[in-house]
Length: 398
Image 1 (cartoon, rainbow, N blue to C red):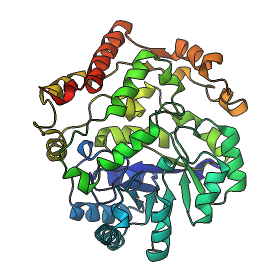
Image 2 (image 1 turned 90 degrees about the vertical axis):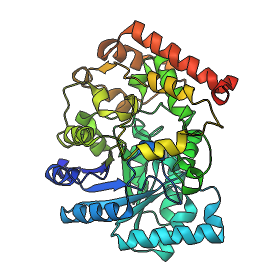
Image 3 (image 1 turned 120 degrees about the vertical axis):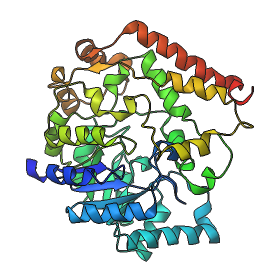
């Protein structure tokens, strides 16, 4: 596959300043969603900019003016059964009608029901299957294709370094295949299904109106696991900008990048690195999941208060402690020392026995990964203590 055919799909935080910069970089498509809607998505509302529908529609017009298509995310892993009620169905179809009027080009779904319904009733949209559907086999890919999917984003937990699978899918599947390049989720993450369900509920309109505590337990637990075993920073499923050509040779021509919660500066750093196929700094700079706090501004504050200010439901003093531990990991992955890293996966893949019998990522970590050991141990202890507040119930009592 020729280099110029590569398509990059970037998120938006609804800052119009992104549009001309994305155009310069040749970004093909942009994606996003309202922080809260009836369907929900793959990010909690409280970490996202809270913008109006008018702002969204105006942003889409600007993207189209720059020749960039727009994809709206309807990728919740669970709909809370709202879609199977008269009132819920009405709300979903009203949302879809607004998306069509706003000029949305495609939607991303996790639900087979939404794929079937949208394909029949809203044929104006192309449909992309979300990574939340966990497509990591030929059987699953063919299932979605047979029901009309135009694009499939493969499982970022399982597919990114499985070149045998990628080559098989490219040979047998005709719809467009996509990978999320700057993901950093754990290999075959055991938290994944629970986490996607959490994200779905914490971005749905009904859930946002209920008292509750939408702290991201899975995110905290995931970070605790990494702090306990830093090799997992290497064995995570990221794809370096320099290795895109390897995936193109295997048949992948479209790469999705994250994250919608990032600042404009961070999104442009990521876009420039992958569009230029090179980054000489700390690879962690391009991996938003490894970062500490999310951006807090006037657009995110109302939703944070809506989700967290429930003094009768939880101990508010714990929130202060939570804020204090969400610090930068001070991890460095020297990207210049990772040349050739992907070769092992192209030829052999991960062994079925697992990481303990392989040791490849551990050896690479010894060369490319650096960190302050004492700081990491201290931070791990603080994460562990906070997680115990869930287990012991202390989080919910004064």
